[in-house]
Image 1 (cartoon, rainbow, N blue to C red):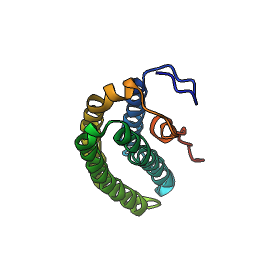
Image 2 (image 1 turned 120 degrees about the vertical axis):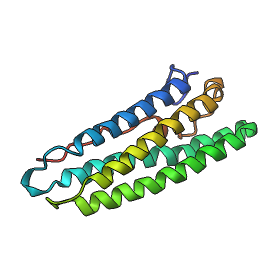
Image 3 (image 1 turned 90 degrees about the horizontal axis):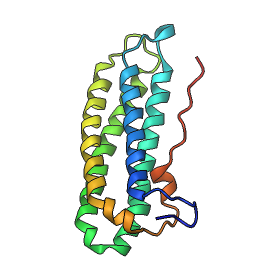
Image 4 (image 1 turned 90 degrees about the vertical axis):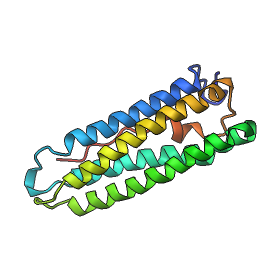
Amino acid sequence: MASPSTGRTAALSLQLSRAHQDLRRRLADLRANLGRPRPHGGDDRLLTHCLAFCTALTNHHQGEDDGLFAQLLRERPDLAPTIANLVEDHGLITGILTRVRDLADQAAGRPDADLEAIGRELDGLAAIMDSHFGYEERAIGAALDAGVRDDGWSEPVLRFRAPRDPAP
């Protein structure tokens, strides 16, 4: 269904799936680069990349909670139990993101930083995200494709700014 405000023609469920794929890719990139050599004895790029990813995922989930899910509840109250489960997942993910941010902040600029703790958190996050995204796509995909009024929720949910690479 095309949105009058953006001229979208792709199904909203497909757009949501693509947004989730982008978040998965960003997390995979972060995980892959976690063990790379850290020039100059420390690497504030780790913190920058962690923060960029955490911000993108947080904005996506806040856009869902405050925009998409609120709109779905108005239009499809029968989805209330499903949406409650999704919001609960968002809370769990927020807790992991907080730990990742804290660990990345502690590791920034420290040549002896133990990155294994961050790696474990990111591995757990990847597993939860994968399960959550799959459930969300199955549970609300048909409702999205049937048409959901877009009062601005689509920007934070479906589009992310490209992460900026920090200067070397």
